[in-house]
Length: 76
Image 1 (tube, one colour):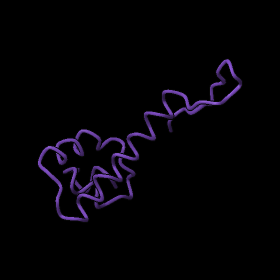
Image 2 (cartoon, helix red, strand yellow; image 1 turned 135 degrees about the horizontal axis):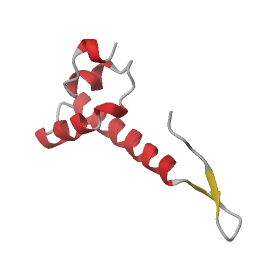
Image 3 (cartoon, one colour; image 1 turned 120 degrees about the vertical axis):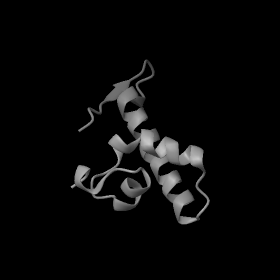
């Protein structure tokens, strides 16, 4: 599980930590790629990107795991 924390800046406002920001960007990107798959317009470059993000895909997300080329027994 990723370590997430809130950081307080000099004005007392809260900002997301770098880890939390990166995790959100990855999650958002995976959802974008899912949309491209659903719309049947995912590019070869996006498939390569999805493969590079395979370690961040939820083990129960069969659609993204299949498109990322993760063998079935690796995500069981």
